[in-house]
Length: 397
Image (cartoon, rainbow, N blue to C red; front, side, top):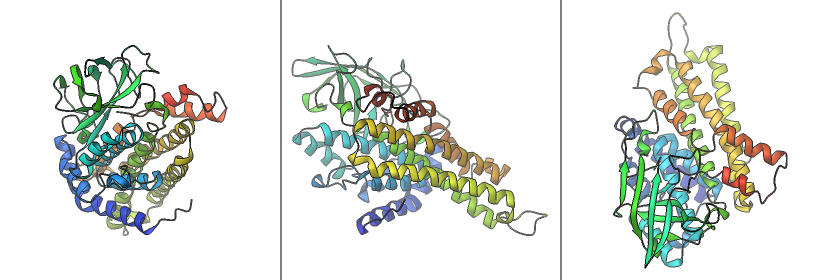
């Protein structure tokens, strides 16, 4: 796939590469050890103008097309998987705001991002449901002068550090489909409580514990759009493309480490570096081709995104996420095997990259679900109005 970039696009990607190397990468291991929010890295992303990747230009953002966007996220994740993931999730919320908010809401929310560097989260998963958005147990009820929010969410990325979080709910009196509604809840709202710890294998700096809502009072300005509209825009399917970019960026970091290590390390009795080993060459070739294939499918899907309907986006997202998942899991595992026992030391980045990939590739849709989406499309099971397929591909955390 020939990707021809404009000067502005190249400048953005070069800035993301610089951030990854100079700012995000040096902190990644510390954030992982301490399982804390990458606040300093978010600040650097903001200062460099990349926190507004998905904020429209008329509101001071970059308003990136999807292809440039995933290429940027890929580069950020190369430096720090958790920073790349959280910036991506924050950015999808900006797309929801652009698609559903009033002009007055946009002025306020986008200003919070561009002028103040504030982060927005997206919380959809529920403890009693498997995979993707769960909205049945989180209910928004109209009250005099506003709404009352009650419910529970888990895997609430950036909990305790966001300015607002997009909570996926059901409007009281509606079923789960027609009543799907989105609320941008300020994290200081009375009745919002963080529950439990975040002590995980990987993606530790995403800090995603459970959050409970008990009689949380919201105003009309905290709610986006009308019931049932949020899942008709094809915005949620964009989570999958960004996830894929994160996987590929982190796996590329692992591959590049192996290549450098093989070229600079020699062990007795061999008189030449590891790079002369046929086994190492084969491993590097396998890793390279897996990532090139996954990247090609991701970029192809992103280039078609703007002109695709929600059904088509569901398929494009599933294709990208399936291949990115399989490739990144293989690459990070084979990277450890290629370097050998020394890779178990946490002074090397392979341990962290492997754990991050193993954790974040669990995000929906999992490989079986992605293959179901792809298979249904290939066999024409359903149609472009297949609501079940688009719901299967809802990606939130």
